[in-house]
Length: 282
Image (cartoon, rainbow, N blue to C red; front, side, top):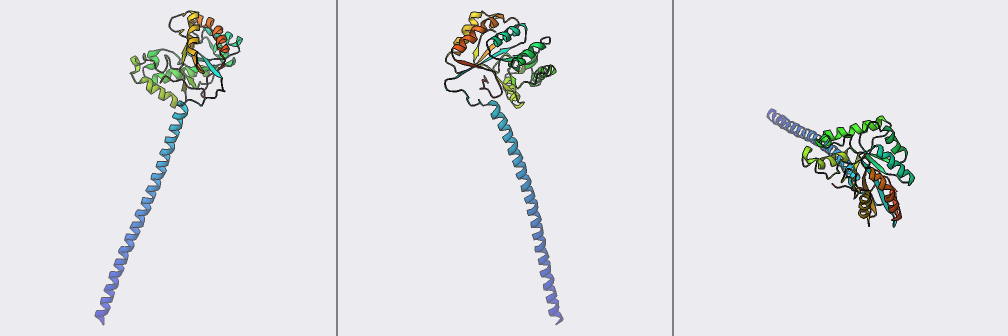
């Protein structure tokens, strides 16, 4: 009888040990499953965060670079007059002509202390200001992305100091496809800058019609008129490049005739905005 009881006790101990082992295994399995579940949840959260960040980046790039849907009415043609490198004494003449002809323009300005009243007049007259860097010095601006941003920010601070909000529009000195920048920042500097400035919230604008007034210190008035009228022929949406620095007196002289001719061709005059049709060389 004692032997039988011993065997039963032994068998019970074995069963208890087996049960404990199974229970321990199940507990460990559950813990591992719980840990795995937590890891999976964290992975899903991290993945969702990455997806959200990626969507934000894509939205920034797409909104910043794709041409806005054409809002032109049937048969309508639009023209954007743009002036670089001012303001100067010459800008006052340009502003007077614009006012007399009831049209507006976009001015891609540099930093010119002493012309604070002209900057303000540009805005007060219903025109738009864009950033063209403070210095317009290729070596200063294009030696690095950091230097370019410093030059841009210097102009922003200058404008804000006289009550003009930070521009959202930008034009690179020489245009986005200039090659002189290669001498200072390397062959890829403009590719990097165009991407960088869009990420910062700017829209850079090039042009599709050039007045040619930068070909000489002071180009012939008739040549400027001819360049614009030939360059815009057959086009529905044009962004014209002019300059309003002091030597460009013939640009101001040509402007009334250009405005008159474009009006006769049926063009509607507009100012650029972040939502305007985009002209990019790069």
